[in-house]
Every structure is written in C-alpha cells, then in structure tokens.
Image (cartoon, rainbow, N blue to C red; front, side, top):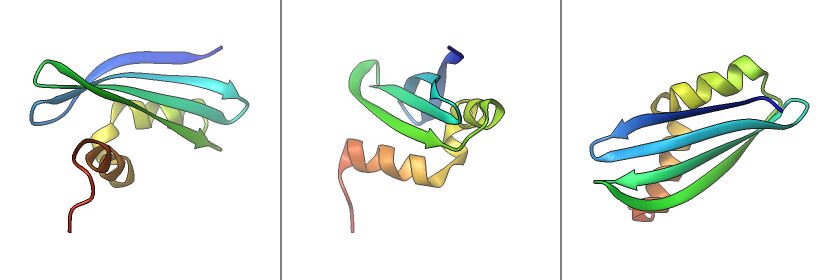
Amino acid sequence: MLSLDLIQHIEGKLRAAINVRMTQEDTWLLTLNLVYDGHPAGKLSFNLNGYSEEEAYEVARNLNQYPYLMREIDEYLWGESD
C-alpha cells in the first residue's frame, strides 16, 4: 500500500499531521489530524477519487493551495460564517 506522512503549517496557529494512502486503484484517503496552538483540534478525512499517486501527494504537500479543502477545514473548526 502506498502512503505519505508529513506535518504541515496550514495558516496562523493551525498545523496538520497529514497522511495520504491508497485505498483502491485511483482512490486515496487524505487524513488530517489538526492541531491549533499546540492543542488537538480534530480529525478530518477526504476521499480523493480518480487521483494519480503524484496528484494525491501534491494535494497533501500543498493543502493550503486547495480552496475547497481549506473551506472544509474552516467550516469544521469554526462553523459556517455569513
């Protein structure tokens, strides 16, 4: 099974321990263990369907470059805002 583990600064005091691993051909599970200001803040996961290995690793390495993922993280941590 192919996988990648890394720790990444997301923004401000938010960091994530990131794991991405293949679950089936062309399907990857991206798991984020969020830490805010040194305290556990939650865990999120996303299915990356139809992604190649390189594409899945690119998402994991550059998470804050993907607005739809950042929006999901913000909503999880802070709720929807108007």
